[in-house]
Length: 150
Image (cartoon, rainbow, N blue to C red; front, side, top):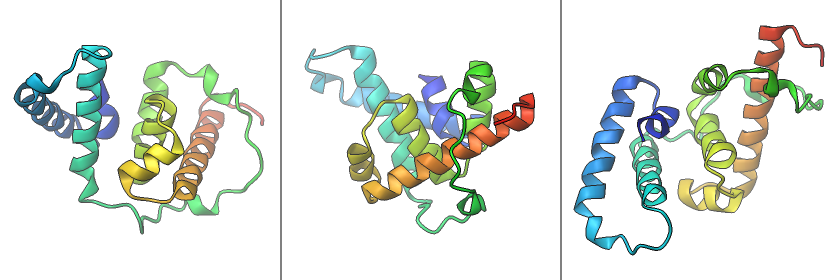
């Protein structure tokens, strides 16, 4: 579960705090587990929700990163496949807060844009836009790292 927390946190110390707070919630709500689905999935959802609540205080509604000026040209979708998991997660960790959270929720956790919009209290179009910009930035970084011509 630490890896899940690390995907949402900016530092290892933040991830450890989220993990600790998440497990406190797991133990305090253990009687609410209804044995529908996997226990690991239930814990993962608590960890993700704990991470999101932690960073909801630092809203990204007005975050400006410079990624807004990226061109709208299509990017090779296979560019990311040349990276190891550790390299990709390292690049994901460099994304601005809002882009990183949306990318984690949609691309890694499997949430829909409608679910992300509900969780983060944003519009679905904002979720889609942030995911697109995050993917585009990640692809550009991969191209820089591995000299891939798009």
